[in-house]
Length: 178
Image (tube, rainbow, N blue to C red; front, side):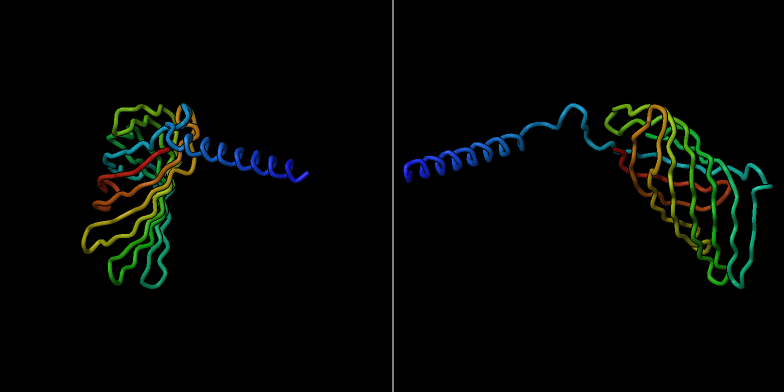
């Protein structure tokens, strides 16, 4: 009996050692065919004029003004196409600071900085920015929250900085899609 117990322990130890070798061996293998490296993207944006003044809403609250409207954003670089931005701006008149939230419905193509083509289709992108009309600058974070067509399943995020304004707001973007 004790001999069998010793054999079972030895077999169990051998199986654990074998499993450890398999796991360690897998760690050195390349990613599965369906998985790929993150897609770095770089380029510029340019904000177009308000497309429909019927969508312009202005509310003044003390020293702050809240504006909501729609306008196009042209993407150039690794994202190439046009997005329709639904924008909400809170401007603080006492100091020139502002916060912006855009929900952008982008249609176009996405190509990685390394040359890989992700595809053509749609992306829904959230932009959240802070800035100053005094210094004429903004910084923003963006996140891809939806995708369709040849870009279905795409998510990602990044940053944008630049000069505010509708029309004419512009700046470079830098991010990662996956």
